[in-house]
Length: 250
Image 1: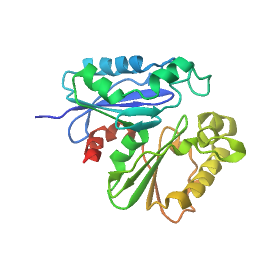
Image 2: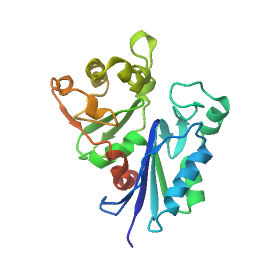
Image 3: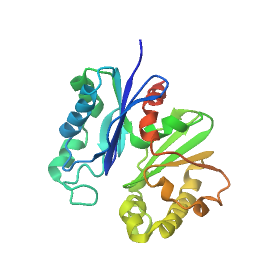
């Protein structure tokens, strides 16, 4: 049986989706969507349902979400609990709806298809890791995403972005898109370098992959001085990893 996968990468700013064959070849790229706000779990489910309805070949679904996702359940999620999107005021009703919501179970039930829900950086990583040693993925976009793999096995998710850094700011706010726009790419790239230097002693990875929508904005000079391998991965990995992500369950 041909296994055709719908992969959907939900971000704070936009939504990317593709249909992939079993080798990861793209069969359909759906048009980029701006993330709608306010975004409830039910609205997200309806967006995925619309993608599924557009192609009868889809046999399974992979969804990448920002935040801490554990066994398909939302533990903590940024952006979607804010009524008007990133950095706007938290809506208590949205927070109550999202925190603890079993998105994987809900999508399985609504779509009648096998569905895998992971953190978006974990899906990015599935596309590029070698399966050898300790490999870390950092994604730079609306905020900071992260994933850690040891010999190809996914480690429990850590919300590194919630840790505080300069002046009591969260890493997410310090390194996120709003800061990049305010500072410009050169100064922001120095922050990226500083962040990597501070995270390395805590994780001591063998390989570091950098992805997300802002990865290409990081200056090459900011990444030259590291002693370990650093690889920039395309933002499309958030979708292309939708096939290999299923192997992470083994």
